[in-house]
Image 1 (cartoon, rainbow, N blue to C red):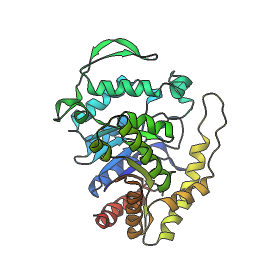
Image 2: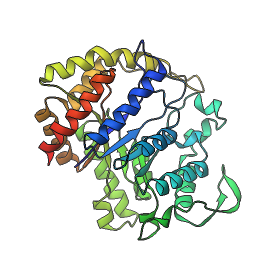
Image 3: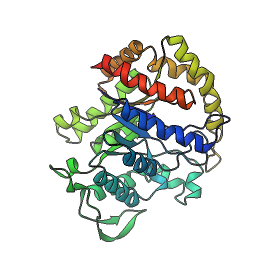
Image 4: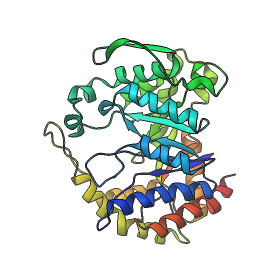
Length: 345
């Protein structure tokens, strides 16, 4: 089982953005010290829900500050980025880090970001498959031309080539690509391309198991080898808060997370004025505490093991900054690595 952290760079009420980013960086550094497997970085624009606007940029910083731990994006939003630029960055980090970088991509939401970056609502509603396929070609082929509706350009050389450090075929050599999936449509899209899924922290085990089952059926139907399908490497996002008592862990999150969620989610603005219902911050925090490893080390280990058994997922990206406090976040990460991991092995 591979357990990592999920870093949102969440700005809690009363905190500055520099303070928030410092906590995000420190939590990743401590994750390596504590023996965790990976760090997954989110990106958001114009909202305090997360103040990291470029997961790839923060990944580059963390790869330079660490030596062993894997670093991934969760996710890089393709509708607001050019897939060739994303591919170049991914290849660069893959080569420079010796293969420690994973590129997570997703469709994002219908936010004002689409207006600011000039991509438009169509890129969100219809353009994700084209962008994803162009990105995959860039990571797997020596020369690429754009032949789609949105991206059309003459053939150019792929520089740097990401396949120079590893053996095997093109799919083995390129950086791993993971797709955030929130609907049957996105599950089928990822499965058709044989790409593992990143499943959100709002989902319970039953829903995640259904999505894994659908992915497996669709991937086999698309002709992917059974051994690759069986070793897909899906990632489950969640929340982790470790304490000596379960009530204490839940209390920590219920004191801090609702204020952050309310402030962060209310700041989202849709590009076309459509109404977006906001989750109740307290009820959502309570839901997360019930779904994920929030409690004693033994309870946390049992929760992770149960999720793995029910879903077949063995990779986890766990939000560890739910307290909003730097010292408490560092302690939470250390306890996850030193007290929970040994129970899983």
